[in-house]
Length: 206
Image (cartoon, rainbow, N blue to C red):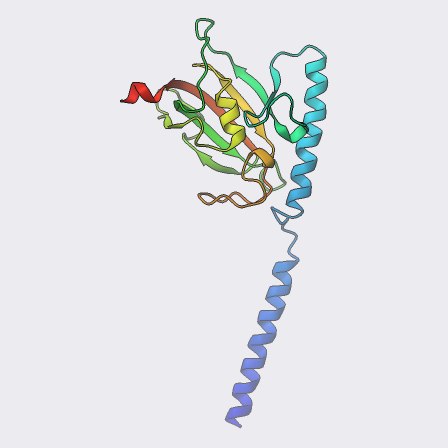
């Protein structure tokens, strides 16, 4: 009799867990990363088409910049370019840009593409708290060549004081692998808000 009661209790618990699991799988919450590669491919291709039309129409606040790792003679596609929106320009007196081997001091914030759960894109890394306050924010320092190709490409075209929003296809980001240092899924296009504060050569550090 006791064994039957224990069996009945265990069976009831298993059935309850099954029902709860079924409900959680169909509770209407969107899978943040469902069809992630397809969505990222579509997002960047559509963005490229839209921005190219603006550039062709004479807009100068948008740019498409070829990755530093490809030459003019190479076969190029949309994913060999980053897309840049200029949020603020450097002073006219600033004409130089960092080299691949230079160190840079930047403020930045990285996001994934927009989704239903995160309309502005999930923030995966940031050097400052929103809203940005130049009097409080502290720069991060690293090598211009020590980041993903898309980020490095942007840095090598910026000047001190430039403020850009940079759209990077996953091929110039972490590609088909997940980031080893943050929660960035494979096939993630990256959106960076970048403010270049300063840069210097390695010789200056010695």
